[in-house]
Amino acid sequence: MTYITSLEMANKIGKTKRWVNDCCAKGLVQGAYKEGNRWLIPADTRWKVGSENRYAPLPIGVSNFELAISDYYYVDKTALIKDVIDYRPQVALFLRPRRFGKSLNLDMLKTFFEKNADSKADLFSGTNIWRQGSKYTNEQGKYPVIYFTFKDIKFSNWDETLINLKNTIQLEYRRHSNILESPNIQQIDKDFFSSVVDGTLNSALWVTTLSRLSEMLHLAEEESVFILIDEYDTPIQQGHTNGFYDEVVAFMRNLLSGGLKDNPHLHMAFLTGILRVAKESIFSGLNNLYVSSVLEKRYSEFFGFTESEVKKILNDYGCGNKLTEIKNWFDGYKFGDTEIYNPWSVLNYVDAECIPKAYWQSTGSNDVIGELLSKGDTKLLDEVRGLLLGGSKKAYVDTAVIYPEVIKNPSSVFSFLLMGGYLTIEQSETMFDGNMMCELKIPNKEIQLVYEKEILSRQDSMMTQDRAIAFQTALMTGDAIELQNVLQSFLKETISYYDAAAEGFYHGLILGLSATLYRYYEIQSNREAGNGRFDIRLKARDTINPNFIIEVKSVKDELPETKIKDKLTACAEQAVLQIDAKDYAMDLQGEVRKIGVAFWKKNCVVISK
Image 1 (cartoon, rainbow, N blue to C red):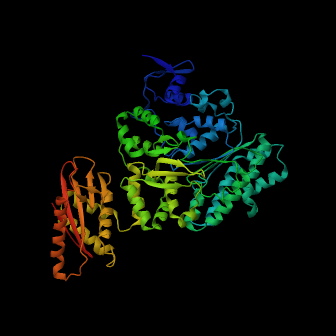
Image 2 (cartoon, rainbow, N blue to C red):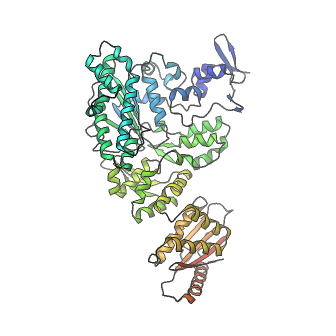
Image 3 (cartoon, rainbow, N blue to C red):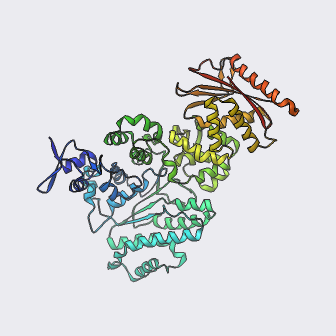
């Protein structure tokens, strides 16, 4: 048997030497033995955790870098540190959807750059950054770091939000209380520091706390300061949703501008968020801001998993044959020119023994997206339904939109959907103002489910999940009577007498219900086929399922009660005959079911053949 050292194994599996040694010491590595002060490990070993043969627990929800790299399977993103050192943006804003690794990467930067009493260098041995040479390793543990995270500041009023913003600042001051012992810190600074910690600082001065702490750290440590702020936009989104947008934006603008704009004590600053939020308010006058959004090529591979990383995870956990499935469900994102998988969903999928489902939708609120769609017009809803049916939408993408503007300008919704992870870019073209005209689409099956369950349901309360399931069941079982009952009940319970008039209304109704079958069917509407144009066609994606052609008729004449059923039956039969006469099924393979539906106000008849 071939044995290798723990350092060689660390390099092989992308972990640290310390992590490998800890696993060996805990008896988790089969066949490993200690020779003097070093561990020797079978070169082809697997990692035994509990009763399972795996590399290590998957870091689901772990945003602490030291914990992730020491105790979990870590996908090595440390090359981000190299790019940061090489490009040295003074202030950079990383914009990515939620759960795409922003917090873990920011904590990685903190762990690497921050000066500590106990060295953290060993955490990085064997990682990508440690192979880059002394130019980069010499930067480890060199700088004071200010680190704020606003990810948990989710309150419904400004008073509670302000209290918690102040508490976040107080905690960071306390973390740096050792600087009070420095001879470079004057009494006036010590008094300011103490008033922050005990909460007695004048209310007008809290917005100066970031700049003042950076100054004191620079003086005490005699090194310029890193400022790291995680999820800076979370309290701003809460302000928009709950009616205190102006207050929170004013506070954040003054706090951040003091620390980031023309600050002589600043070495570099990095912020993370989902949206840029405000071009005129938060970052006004900040000329040194570099925005890394989903449109940018730089840093594109560091947030989310690349395909090579996904392949390695699958192979390491014994499910290398699942690439096609995981690709259909969780791939499809394009950041810059890099193909990206949703990392949260990939890890949950592998951890759940490769059961595909919408893992990402429960990780955060879709309130803002739901609000935007609910306030949009019919055209917007039709465009979103078109996306759900597999289409695309060409839209101008502005990465600097702000919440209030979007309510007034529905065209900005698609920028929000893209930045939030609900759409991806199929093609793009750079415009004169630096923004892009993009062809947008839904990235994968998981996000299709998010639209169905979390977004479209908000916009159209008639399309409940119960109704959609009842419609699907009646359609798939070929039960024309039940399908008629479902539609009849739907009409009576949900629509106005005055809505029920034009054929287009009923067409849209059935198309909306059919849209929930997109996973199994290609939904087509008003397309040419045979010798005419069909109304709705459900083309099976799998030959196991039947195809459906649905022809819709609307009776506009006034009818006496006794004539309604006969008239609708005749029209529904005529609709089925039209399907045959026009040969709408000409290019379909497999079984074809023909359905005629006739409507009169809140009444309908269904004929199926």
